[in-house]
Image (cartoon, rainbow, N blue to C red; front, top):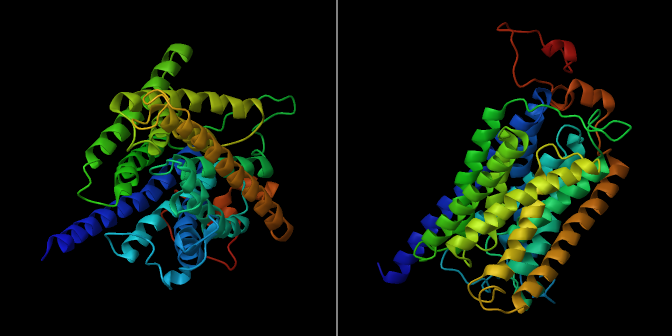
Amino acid sequence: MNIEALQSGMDTIWVVLTAAMIILMEGGFALLEAGFVRKKNSVNIIMKVFADIIIGTLSYFILGFGLMYGADLLGLFGTNGFFMTGDLSHIDLTISLDTYWLFQGAFVIAVISIVSGAVAERVNFRAYLLYAVIMTAFIYPIAGHWVWGGGWLAELGMKDFAGSAVIHALGGFAALAAAILIGPRTGKFSSVGTSSVALPSNLPLASVGAFLLWFGWFGFNAGSTLAATDVRIGHIAIVTMLSAAAGGAVTMFYTLFRYGRSDAPSVINGSLAGLVGITAGCAYVSDLSALFIGAVAGLLMMAATNWLEARGIDDPVGAFPVHAISGVWGTVAVGLFATEGGLFTDGGWHLLMIQVIALVVLCAWGFGLTWISLKLINIWVPIRSTEEEEEVGLDISYHGIMATHTSPEFIEIKEPFSDDDLS
């Protein structure tokens, strides 16, 4: 076996393993969101995550990958590679195209899962399925082409190593559009503007979900090298760890000293904010910069959470504060702290300006296309569950089953399911 074949084999193993780690993050999303929402909506959370994987995989295979990595048309989108067919030799790889697709397919699943949390407990399941197709086949792949597929933002020199902007900021602003359009959960805000808290159903479950996401993030970031022999892997891993720890630390001590107690949901989301924040610059910034990026991401997440509450926007799991705001900050931070081109390192403004331009475009794309898509879907299928469905719970309303029950006996099932069958 020659050196090239050996390296290709090692790279293939590395990319497949890290892709599997990213796919396992869907288990993290499922547990995190199920733990944060009320018990009567837990199954619905799980079903949306399954939909993310199923629809994301198929949509990206049929259309999305071609739009993202096909032959470039004017820097806007790809024009071939649909169903993984056609000439894709322009993609320069040391691994097989199938291996590369698997890794990129894992990314697209993560994008739609960001939106899932923001509309938890009141989105119509059928409408969500339609939106998932649009996001994974069209919205995300075109934006991904601009940055990673040789499109116009790549030509400008935009840097986003593993997706603070392309995945998290875009997905987070899409989540904001969806949350605004669908509206808050019934009873979340009063007529005079006061806010009520729906207590999480299972915080230990949510914390396990966060740990799974944290684990998968090493695949998310370090796997983006696409090479097992890339000497940056160790550095990428340590800055990922440092940023997540810094984000969790600032939220832990902020809530401890401000409220007299460390707030568990805030610490969970603070750590995730640190992970999001470092994703763009994990290959470009120093260890000390990573600590600062993570700490600021945690504080910005807290501020954004309060901002949503003040404006009557309901985001049950904090998708917008964690993903959008931390993603924006992480992308800007590349322009500030990148060891090559950063304002505070090389002293140049050029990279920072490019990062800001790219952010404006990607966030507007995610928000605008989601708004339009949901408006169109709503003409055919209502995007909001009915008051009765929300009151009963989406588990029973859309899936005919509860997450847990106390009866050990068999029950007689009628067709179709009724609430009495499972009460």
